[in-house]
Every structure is written in C-alpha cells, then in structure tokens.
Image 1 (cartoon, one colour):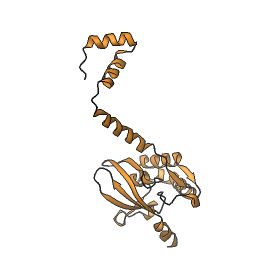
Image 2: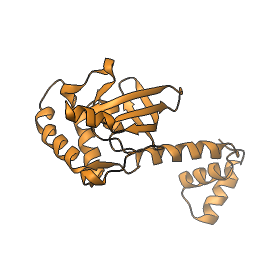
Image 3: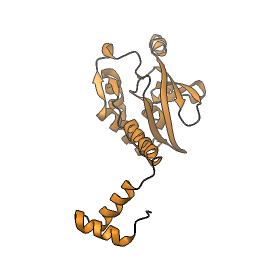
Image 4: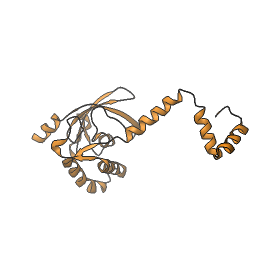
Length: 185
C-alpha cells in the first residue's frame, strides 16, 4: 500500500494523535502518485453527475404524480423504477410551463443524447407509458433511462443504472417540436 515502515506509521499516529486506520489513510493520501488525482477527478465528476439540479414543469409534475400511485401497484413496473421517478420529482425544481427553458428535457420533448463511454448518439422522445414505443424512439418516463433524462438540459451529463450496467450520458440537443406535434394530435 505504501513504502513507509510500520514503526514510522506508529510514531506518526502517536505524534499526530490519529487512530491506526486514520494514519493508514493519511499515509496513503500523502503518497499517492500524481496520476491518482485523475481518478479522484473522475470520482468527483461522477458525484457531480448524480447531484445535478433538474427542472420540471408544473404540468409534468402533476401528471407524473397522479400516475405514480396506481403505477406503484402495477407488477409490470418495478418498485425501484417508481421510487426513482418519485425521488427525481421530489428533488426537482418546479417551474411554470411557460417558464421552462427551451433546452430542458420535459415530457414529449425530443432529446439527443450521447453515450460518454461509446460516443453513440441516440434520439428519444420522453413520453408517458401508454405512448412508449422504443422502436419509434419514444421512451417511457417510467423506464430507467426515461427517468434519468427528465429535467436535464443541453450540456448536462448524467449517469443512471440500467438493467445491464451504468450509462453515462450527455444531453446534446433538445427540441420541443415533438411536444407541439403530440399535443396537436
């Protein structure tokens, strides 16, 4: 773990007054190689991805909140998905529908996402479950990726657990034309 003899670690603990575990962590931190700072930066970026603020409209929050109770009783949806969406709604900043920025992903908006690990570009329209059809690029807000993308804006990066691992995405573009088209239909 480090190159210091144990007796020096022991003396360090006596002088500084730290427990053996704290001394070990301190020595490890002080003797890290410079490239380890890149790993710390990557961990910091991951934490910041998870804690980004999201924005939802009043109408989206109202529609989704109404759906959460009956959907939570539906065995087709995992309870984890329902709890994740509820958590996202609870932490979101709610704004009036006419105050939402054009670059924020809302229900019925089209989003272009870039997978940060593979570079793959994907287009999804975020919809309610009855309108979902992944073959047509319409993803349910109750799907893990649908819940993940709600409320983020162009330039935001996020990560989200999906059934086969962890996806790290960046929002490249958002269009609300899909919303106008679906509202007119």
